[in-house]
Every structure is written in structure tokens, then in C-alpha cells.
Image 1 (cartoon, helix red, strand yellow):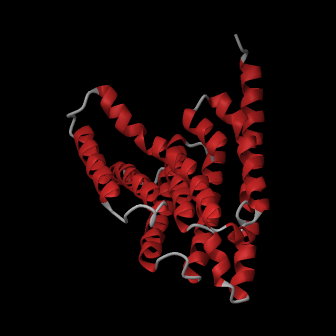
Image 2 (cartoon, helix red, strand yellow):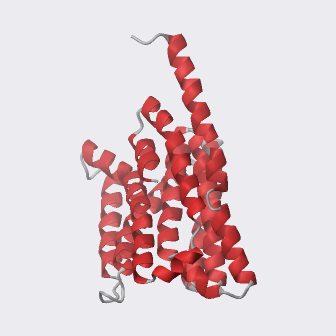
Image 3 (tube, helix red, strand yellow):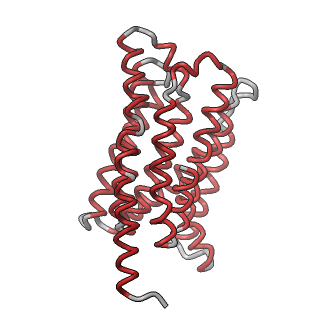
Length: 262
């Protein structure tokens, strides 16, 4: 049996480790942002095509989904880490849009979702948001994440496979049906819990796909790797490592998945 003093000590220590993860995550995208800015100023827009916007988008949506998850649980350190992830990744996406490496319509939609997501999450974190509005946001995150994931996975390999919106459409329809059935009590208690956990698992899978999209881009265009920052990858690994003790202490599967995969 662990004493209360030992529990409090471990709670404080793991929280400090999680807090320390903010530093590498704060700097995570900075080397890539600086490199992108240098290439933009030099007129070398082609270098930014080394960073796949689909990969950045999956990471951004993963951060946004986990931000909602941790904001609901009032995990302050994790909320701050995910917020940094959303903001820094969005800056990279903005640079990609400036270089025309990301289509403008997708960038506009992404900007709107990020803006609303940050505002709603922080209103909810400080208990200033109506419960109905928050549940609507959770439903949106669940449906959006489940629709985007298979579509991004499919689109990564275009033009080697035919371009199609069918994967995203099917997944979106399935997610809408599942959410409506859960909200109207048409599912069992286990089914409702499963639907409630879908956004967290979708976020995990989005994080998993982010490096896959990058590796595929590197495989197709090895010369484009000059436009990548290896230091950013190192910072990400350090930050995730610092989150592992907290994930083990609070026994949170989503936090553990983020630490290992993110």
C-alpha cells in the first residue's frame, strides 16, 4: 500500500516531468519554422514541399483532439503541451499555404477549426462553456477525426491509387450514425463508452500516420529531405519521453499512447 505522502510526492514529481516537456515541445517546430522562413525569404518555395501538408494536418488534428480530452480532465500540463502543438503546427501549415504547398480551401477550413477549437477548449477548461456546446464540440471532433483519418491515409498514396473521397465519406457517415445513436440512447452502455473514446483513439491513429506520410514523401523525393529539420524530430522524442512518467502515474491510456507514438 502506497502512503499518501509517497503518492503526493510521485504526483508532484511526474507533474514536474510533464511540465519540463513543455520546453522541448515549445521549441519542437521552431527549427522547421525557421528553415521554412529562410526558404520563403529566399524564394525557394519548392523546399517546403518536403513537408507533407497531409502529415502536418494529421498531427494538428491529433493535437486538437487530445487538447479536448485533457481539457475535460483538467490535466494542466498536458493541456499546455497540446496547445503548443496546435499553435506551432499551425504556423508550419500557414507557411506551407504561403508556399502553395497546401491547397487554399483546405487551409481556410483548417484555420476555422483551429480557431474555434482553441477558444472552446479554454472556455471549457475554465468552466465557462455551456455543457451542450461542449458536447456538440466533442461530437464534431469525433466525427471529423474519424472522417479525416481514412481520407488522409488514402490521399497520401495518390496518384499511385485513384483519387477518391469515398473513404472519408463512408467513415463520416458511419461516425454520424454512431454519434446520433449514442446521444439518443440507442446503444448499450458499452457502446456509448466506445463512441465516447473514439476521438482519443482517432487522435492516436492520426499521430501514428503523421510520420508515415513523412516517410512516404521522403521515399518519393529523397532530395527534398534538405527541407526537413532533424532537430525538430529530436525535440519531439525528448518531449514525449518526459511525458511517459506522468502517463504511467495517472494510468491514462491516451496519455501513454501520446507519449509513445506522438
